[in-house]
Image 1 (cartoon, rainbow, N blue to C red):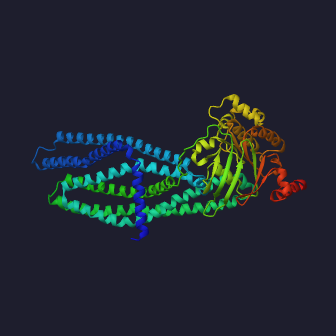
Image 2: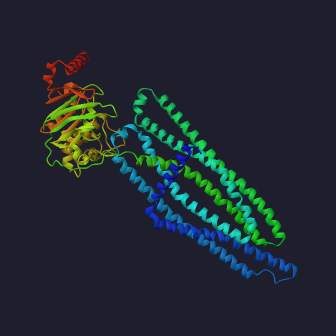
Image 3: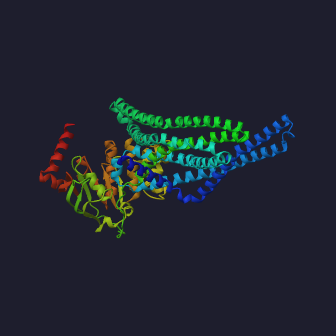
Length: 598
């Protein structure tokens, strides 16, 4: 066996043991499930023996009556045996119901714990995880892979326990009937395991590939669905369909190979079982003619032979399912093992934030290469700071560092003199309000979306914030006003209206520091004037960071930071920067010339 195969086996065993570890809190119920499964199986195992005894009584009685050597069939004893047989099957059914009922509860609670762990994990993952992983693939792990695990726990575990007990019980019953026939039946076991072992190893590779490709396919579908307007606008339907077909073909091929290889196992097991069945029937017939065993016993043994193959076939099929489940569990656990945000060690707290922000010798890079080197910024309380620069200059990165979406690699960022690393992320972010260029609204009423910025906000506060953001007027024109329900992507209102709602949300939160990332880029000129007035009003008396591309909107800023390649290359007021005739002046003049030309 190669080192790669050995490592793969270790990983599979580790994944399986970790999954079983989630069953530990429900060990008591599992014990009851185990006992119920054992009893149910034992009652089922005793059935063929009682049936064989019944046949023996009937046969011997009939033979005695025909030969005149006895009184005939003992119908009283036959009746007792049939009642016993009926009781065995009734109790078997009752215990089967009990174990299925309890196992359903165990499986769903286990998946509930896994789903909770994943959701809690998603809240702890840093921003770079979401930047580097497909949303669709992550959703596939949370939904499809967990469904696979849940179905396996609910169905396959009890089947496996039942198969093991059934196999052991049948062997015992077969030995009590005839050891020679039992040895013949046992020969099929090592042959079966030897034959199916390579198929199990081969199928695992394709089951893993199937789950990974399914996540990739979900990611592509999610991208095409959320960006369907852009796809149609640029006529890229054919390209999107081609990519879908390619990934879908890969999924089909991986699934086909996995199912084909694993599907070979059952016919092979049935073939070996049928050969064993034929051999036992021949030898058993000879033993009956020699009166070594009774006719009822050989009938019971043949029934056990059929049942003997059933648990082996079931375990082969379960091994198939487990391969797929291990692949799904591996993807789930790899998500749970992702590196989390740096653990918090809050030692400081700012009670009344004034809004002073300083960057002292800050260094940062998304990889080994630093984007920011020795960055120093000093923002006084109540100042409006505009951040400008070309695409990729580091404007958004600066804000992400301030909010601790990313952690600095050197230096420090301080809020009112307190290092933000000494504060909890929740406390730090509670002092900031954000209005982003990309709006985010959830499925719910307009009122709830605005109130998202403040817990237990009153109706009056919501309306006041909407009026300040110039959103009240359009809201009241809607059929249900503030009770209008937005759909999942809020496409039942315009982009500009969505932007107004996010501004109202930030106004309602009333934070000491405001961050505006090109907040008016998606509205018309007239609405922009209203929003700018509202922005000027809410920025008054509080520290504000404004990321701007249209320089005409930030001419009144107290300080303008001009960034390029991760560093602040110029700073000052609008007039001061123009007088310097540097990078900012070139940006402004080129933009002004473009506007004049337009």
